[in-house]
Every structure is written in C-alpha cells, then in structure tokens.
Length: 540
Ligand code: G16
Image (tube, rainbow, N blue to C red):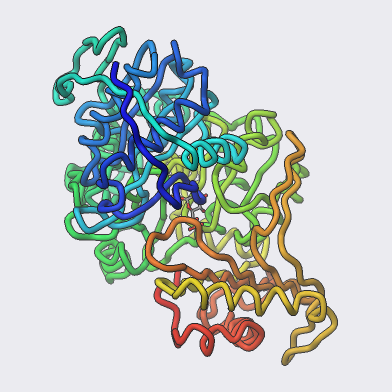
C-alpha cells in the first residue's frame, strides 16, 4: 500500500447526482483519487466490506475503474464486484448492492451528458440500501475533499475486466461479474413476461433506442427473452462517446426514435433510455408520454402488474414534476409526497415503506424494487399494462386524461448561461416572492409564491432553496430552478404546468396551452433580458 501526498481541488461538491465535470477535469492528476479517497474516509463500513463498481462505458470509464480498484484494495475493502468490461447500468448497481448485501457502490457516469474525450464524466456513491448517498453523506465527502492531503493506493497491474473471473489484489477479492444477468433476473420476477411476450407474438411493433449507451445490452437480453424481433432494439452497442450523440432521451436528442414514432407507419410502442440506463421515455404512435403523465399512469395501473397486484403504499414525485400523479393518489386514497429534485430524496420514503412508486419530470420513474430510477423497468411496466389492458399506449393516455384531466406540462431549459446571469434571474424572482401573491397577470392571479423547502418526514432533515415556485389561483404554476447536473456555466430550468379538467380541452397544442404562463414567467423573471438568451436551448 502506498500513501500518496495530494492537495485539495476546488469544486468537488456533489450536485444533484454525484460529481459531474468534464473528462479533462477528471483526468487531472489526483482529481479522481481525491474524491475516491474522500468516499472511503467518509464511509467507514467500506473497510472490510463489499463494494460494487461499474459505469456506463463512457470515455475514461475503464481507467477510472482500475484506479478505484487499487484504492479499494489499499483502503481495506474485503471484496469488490465489478461489471464485465466495467459496464453496469445505474439500476443494475442498485439491484446488485441489495442482492449481495454490499456496503455500497461506486457508479461512473455523467448520465445523459455527452461523452468522449471532450465530453463529461462523473462519479457517484450509493449506500447499502442501493440508493444515492443522502445529503449528510455527500456533505461529508465534500468536506473531506476540501482538506485532503493524501490518498492510499496499491502499486499493481490492471485487472483484466474483459473476462468473468475471480481474482485478488493485495488482500482484496475481486469478482468480474456478468453485467446483465442479476438485473434481467429481477425484471423477470416483477413482470408478466408471458403476457408481454404475447404482444410481440401478436404483431405489436416496437422500437427501443439504446442511444449507444449502457442500456443496449440489458435491453437486448430482456427483449430477446420476450421474443421481440431482433431489430427492435436500435443503437444497442455502448460506445465511449455514445456515437457522437447526446444520450438524453428527449425529443431533441432521441430524434431517430421520435421520427420513427411520428411517421405514418410508425411502430405501436417506442421507448428509450439514457447514458446510464436510469431514465426512460415512452411513446405511442404519434404520441410522446410526458414523464409526469407517465408516473401518474403507472400509478393508476400498477395493480395490473404482478409485483404490485396488491396495490401501492404511496407515491412520491419531485416538486417540479406535474401534479398528475397526485390526482391518482387521491383517488386511490394513498399518500403522495413532494420531494426536491434528486433521486436521493426518495430513499428514506422507500426504506420506510411509505411509498411504492416514485418519479420525476426528468424522465425518471421507479419503484421499491431498487433505490434508483430504472429505465427498462418503466418500459416493462408500460408493456405489462398495455398487455393487461389490451389497449395501445395512445389509448391508455387518452383514457387517463378523460378520467383525471390533463396536466399540460413542459420544461424550458436555458443552457450554458453565465453563472452570474443565472443567479441574477433567480435573485430577481426571489426578491418578488413576498409581493407576488394577490397580483394579477392577464387572466391569472398569484395565489402563492415561495422557495421550496423539504422537510423529510423520516429523518426530519430539512433541505432549503429547492426551487422558486409561483402558483396561480387557477392551479397553474411555474417553477425556476438551477440544474445541479450541468458542467458548463449554469442551466436554468423553467417548469410550466396548466391543469385542464377531464371535460376540457385535452388535445390542444402543448406550448400553445402553456403560452400564457410562459409569458408571465418571462415577465416576472426578465429571463430573456438578463441572460440574453431569447429562446430556451431545449424544450421538453
Ligand atoms: C439526476 C437526478 C435526478 C434529477 C436529474 C436532473 O438524474 O438523479 O433526480 O431529476 O438529475 O437534475 P437537475 O435538474 O439538477 O439537472 P440523472 O439521470 O442525470 O442522474
């Protein structure tokens, strides 16, 4: 074991989901090592424990894994299980931590951010429950990075990750495991594979876009078992630079899938996942299911799926996610929780048995089967529901709106905004929060305006400054938030929502329906003048 002197780097504070920076930042000498040592220093149970390691296959994944293996051995981990070729999706890591009672896992991914030498990289620690470390742990890791002056490593050769094998590094056992088998086994235990399989036998056309990211091999394995045609999984081979693409499943970056689904003779069912396999989108023919609606529809129909046949305990959504799931929860008479953005905030609710399902507007949904969002799980939920209801995705969505009404919802992202300008927009809205209630803008009157604070009902922790929301008497609202996952400048997110009752206009153009609220948000924030960005970079 070698003790290497180092000095601290600025800015190693984990964001919404771990530490995300450019590859070049991570490749600086000692940068990754400092953060990894801070994890070992902050999580003492890893000494003598089992650690799971894997990533989404992006550029620098394999190098980082070898560094982590050497440091795990030097820091006294008893055992490490690592995915073959360094590949493990985020939901697979969560499932494997839980299955093998590991003390934690390190996931190497910058999720939906682009990859390659000029792209992004990231590292995230998940705890023994399989979920992203809570703020108390990420705060401790960050505090440690600020004073770090050495790290421990072994001077030893790389481990061959291309073959399934058991080997040793110093006193530490290493097992290179099949990346997909534990995960696919779990999926089989949750869903009615026979019923889903019948959909394909009966000719349902289907397209899953792996976006050249980690989900390809998982989707190939699952859909092969289900008897889907071979060519129904596209862009299935994980590539270090995602084939030059941006592995973010939204209308802009999953263009190939959207074009197929909106074509005259398009498939009946379309889906995609992101860089590390935790996000999902689902499309019917000529219809994109908004992630907020998706959570509501999964909640309303969960009882049709074997794993949830006895009903659900409750549901949670992040604050900026639309209230569509709340309407379902009220009807089912189960509790609904509103958390800050970040999957880590669902962990306590799941561990405490208060919820079964949770989801976010950022294309995330999952259940208590693991402690991460799970892209393929959501797609299988949808397929199982399509099979059980004997209806297409499009029919299910329209039926849902006719029952519960429709929460028209969109997110406008202003990317690569200069930090001071983004902060100025937030400050401008913040300064008005006290005086907005009672003011009228066009047909809308402000009922409430605040900065969202979350009181965790389980551990009683309080998380402040989680987004600025302006809620109108009509129930419509907008929310401003600064993203915690970008790496260049700031990303300002504007979330817009307008509710239309079940007997109202359910099939209108989305942006047109939201144009009134969008205009008010623009007026109150002065976002265009302050940032100089006249249009959002991405609308989803
Ligand atoms: C992460 C988090 C999600 C969050 C998303 C966007 O997802 O796990 O909870 O909603 O980032 O966060 P932000 O709005 O701060 O950019 P992922 O898929 O990127 O790991």
